[in-house]
Length: 90
Image (cartoon, rainbow, N blue to C red; front, side, top):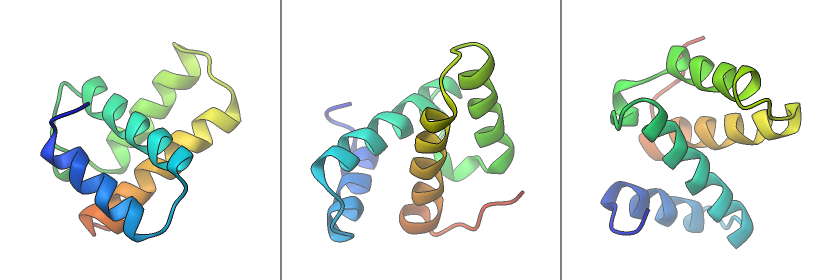
């Protein structure tokens, strides 16, 4: 994850919003995994459909708990609203 200008920008926005370091690490991790899951597509090119696909993968394939899915969702909503400033479609 080091060296990514995009993730550095995300980190900067997280810090501007005064999130804890723990939240920063968690959000960066989920955003990174989301990008990798979608073959390194830029998040600007993705929306609600891709988020739903990622969350379904987490639930069905990875069998993560509901709270973990919610954590991933919160990171991706933050990404779209605060970093990209793009409203999410349903």
